[in-house]
Amino acid sequence: SQQGEEDPQALSIQEGENATMNCSYKTSINNLQWYRQNSGRGLVHLILIRSNEREKHSGRLRVTLDTSKKSSSLLITASRAADTASYFCATARVDSSYKLIFGSGTRLLVRP
Amino acid sequence: GAGVSQSPSNKVTEKGKDVELRCDPISGHTALYWYRQRLGQGLEFLIYFQGNSAPDKSGLPSDRFSAERTGESVSTLTIQRTQQEDSAVYLCASSLGQGIDTQYFGPGTRLTVL
Image (cartoon, rainbow over all chains, first blue to last red; front, side, top):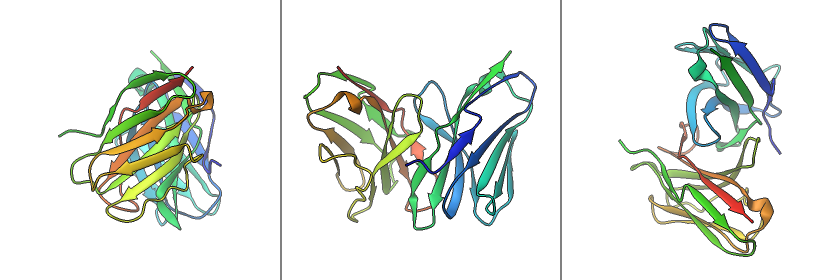
């Protein structure tokens, strides 16, 4: 069964706005990763946050992790039409950190 | 540098036929992973290879699925007697080593079983 669950399932925003996606998970993790997927094919790694970290930035991306609530959020600031894609969180469990468990994803549409 | 490559990019087959999907990992990456993604869903872990260690096959959905890897190079995922529910995108990834290393994904093979 999937461990990570994202919400919302779909998000439509105007270019320039910020997009926030959330991910919840069930068991203890080693790290949590966010991936992006265009057109249902290859995934691109965006950012990895370890269990002892609370926030991480990469360009226009900001990721937070709250291990007490078993949740994470991905914020994309000043969105662009090119950000349109599906975004997935993936957790690496403590007991099998190589085995990423993916959520069902958030489909983001950025309208120009 | 070359990324992870997969072939074929698309495969259409008839129910009951066997298929072979190929993955070429990034050179020097000792870890290799196969995932399956059904339409509109997230990825499901299938199998993991790390160097010469015994693979973790815990995600394979049935004994019709098998995978091999030659050393630290090419891997082949074989599905025997395909069923319609096997239709999905099969994604391969590789990483430098075990554990928390970033996984780099190939473009996937879209399998359609008629």
